[in-house]
Image (tube, rainbow, N blue to C red):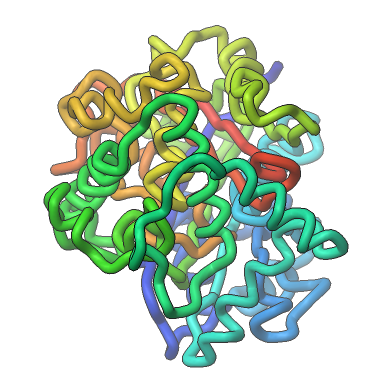
Length: 412
């Protein structure tokens, strides 16, 4: 396949931004990415706009990308809107890469933006209700609950306040993993403490406070075994990535020393597997496809950003990606192997738990972090000698796993 390069990245701070609209956030991220690439917006030949909740939150459907991009003077090019749950931004990037590889454009833009925070708490939380089969909601809830059967839930470990229904999903995933592999709440807390401590060094993170494992365990409960810091917050934010072909790299005079090569880009949906068949998790399948496409193995990865909508999500995904055996995600996390300075640093940005999770922007924010890691410009978060980086981003629920998963592998 023809080479595709990431040549520009941009990202806003993530957080609660009641006074900033989605057009403004999108413009900030796109202008950063164009400036980072050293090109003008006139060089763009196609754009892919990832967003999952603007229709629900604001009633803006159908032409979200056209509206956001035209407001900053980008028009007259193909613009495609991408809605793919929490993997919307990563899916936009996959399409931009594919578009360039297919010869339909030499320079393409992927944008992810989300404005999810609202003073209307019910509106915010209900934004997630369409992330599974709404025609069978009771059946979905019952199936997920069965995954967690056999693990005793201590009294007082469920929040009396409302929370995203996906926290119940991740709690069930957690209890299944505890029952199947012996994973402990303390190991889950170790992941969360590690990610919050990473985010202390990320000025764009929603939260920048460090925690000990004990502080994570004693924090307010969400739903057992998850406590508040183990769970990603509701966030606003935007991120953007510019990709181009080798011909455009030369034609536009883009600095090749700052360019990052796309080694693999894979989108995967799931199956009706038995939950016990963990080796066939959709991310495990996507990971194997991505490694084959890139011509590498998990042992070659220097640094990874994975979808930790909860700390348990990180444990599941590092196993799916082959960074350890199934069942060993908890122990290696507790030993510090996934921390900065460890064997395979994961989520040096702080991850979704701490950096924030504006769902349409999340996948592209992972790319922002990894491009800086590969350039050696991540400052106090830098993974020494990083040469190959992997981003995993998932979203929605179908069956006993996410509805969609994305894997992107980048190299220098």
